Image (cartoon, rainbow, N blue to C red; front, top):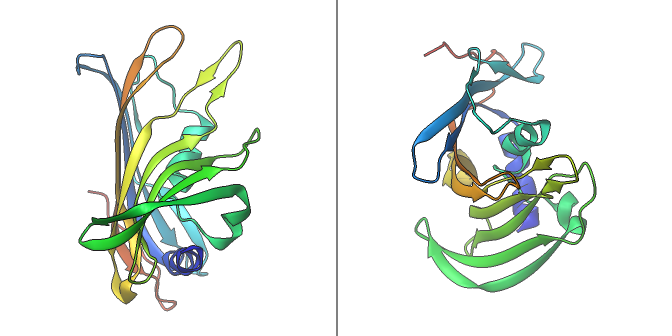
Length: 214
């Protein structure tokens, strides 16, 4: 599975796409208190180097929640988690059984960090890997570690990431969603998370990929 994920990550690195992230802060009855939203294009420069571009100024009207460096890193690395071979040392993996998801017969794997250190952002949860070719088709869990000390708390919601097939038979992340109550010391906060990964286009060396604002 890790070998297939490594191939998937290598293939995805040749694609441009649009990533739309939205965090809603709700009260426990479901009324919206605040929101953060941003849209970024992952593009390639004329030199062939990958780059990111904000499509427009982010909407930032959160009430009690704050977007931290860890949150932004999780959006890029943990929510679309690709379990490549170079990460195997950091995790313990246990087979939990077999299930069918997204029309694929899958192995269900429990994935947990062996240990976490300050500054790390790791995945903890479940992965469904196709029995046909070991492609990951779904992941469900949270980013760890939670960051708690005497003065501050930085808590992270549970989420599910769905993948879909692109050309070549690889499965790329297409959507992440979560709805979780975070137990802060000064009172719980409900967070709703939504991320979309759209318009996958394979980079061709002869042209630069750009998107027009919507």
